[in-house]
Length: 247
Image (cartoon, rainbow, N blue to C red; front, side, top):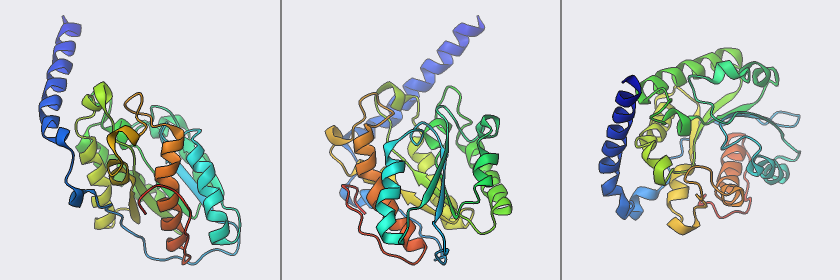
């Protein structure tokens, strides 16, 4: 009986999500596609290789974009950055401490921490929900601010979700908007809006074959150029890394 009720509740939630998403099928107007980046206050570039940490989900775990980000930043910074990826498939803001990733990441003493959990936070099945995700993310940002007082804490919005996986995440765009809002309110040090850059691509070019995990080459093309420019600017440098992302 409980299983039937749970299935009925999920079906109702999916139906509500589908109805909510219908107006979006036409796609956003061009003016709505402008990335909502929130740049941090400039920091001095350290006199050693820049240390970057990535804290997140399968969208960052073993992804080629993290390697190409380092390659793109190297000529801009004058040395190869050190990139530590602390990402885990299925991780969300409620479970990240259970993965054991935070401690080793903090131990690398990064100069900038890139954070992305929204794609799993927004999952109707087991995500924490929007309000709780916002509360937990603010708590994590405060914790990182205490543990890494000199590091920039930057949230990243990531790719859209489509098909069934999109219906299971009807408020993903709201989670992404919350990341931008937290940066604007000073809870984090900045935000990079990669989601809007994905939406600027034609639907058939977004690489979302399974509805959730973009093709690695598309991901790198969207992320690397604008993110390299964002990080370089945060440390007083310019970077013209090539890529198809709208930087």
